[in-house]
Length: 407
Image (cartoon, rainbow, N blue to C red; front, side, top):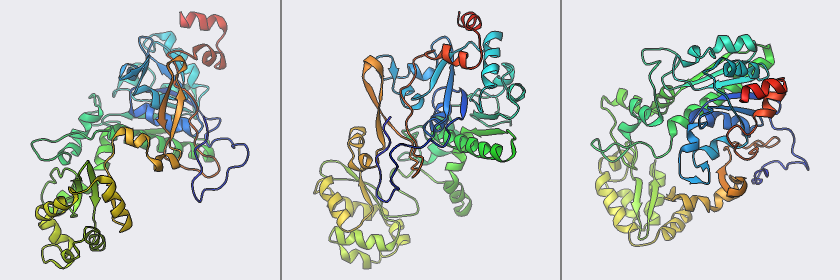
């Protein structure tokens, strides 16, 4: 893939790109759907080689999650670009033994099995570490490595509910909603990737491998940090605020003549800029609005007054005005508008990955910029079992062993 576009102030890259940071690191990836594959995708963009072990009966479940372009699912493509695929039946002795032999050639082993399943398959940390003593064993689960709910199944939406995220998302307590993106899944994947990087650094210093754990539950609780303290400090449970914020006003989405615009005013200086922009400078001296606590107490009246002004002109009009007055505001964009956003283009964030005869797909690169060794999307997503023969050959399997295993 092409390198990301250079940014103002970034160091110039020499004629040929240097090796990526994780060049030479090999990861055995037994994860599925979103959280685990997102974690190993981060490692792939940083240069690690990812061997994706999939089920023989259809592979990763995300392959079947639409919409589709040919056989390619919209969930699968962005999270599995640049990986290599091998399909093994890990419930059978030969498939399990193949995983152990592959683990012996790898630096990192990643799984997101339901609690207790890895041990049942004899692919838990003790068995994998017996195959490779200094390996990094990374486990991503729904409820963590222990506790009364250790063995329960869990998915992003369930954990958004369990950790309280849904209780503060939506327009009112009777109509809570989940976040429209998989924030718990992807957040847990980021934590796991950071843990793997830290463990690799420790191994470089000491030669010791270790276990890395993260979970959806812990991620959701971490994301709720402010709201948990809100309950503790105020004595009241926070409630859904829609696009607003319990601590600031005006703060939220407002209708324009042709769309919506988000405004975020978090202090009195910004409120003064907003008032000047909408030609209401007297509001800064109004006893109802002159401080943020007063604006919070009178938010309904203030929001209605602002709304009556913004509805008169287009989103583009107000965006230009707010930019002129340095007011924190943004148009609320749809997916098509994000794909064509000039700032997104300037950062080189979106790239095309080939899908063979089916065309190509636009995927975002991880939002990390390194001035000397920038992340690079390593290539196309794999077809199921596409790299089985070469992966097994590299691991020392003979041709007869490969044929017996794949049959």
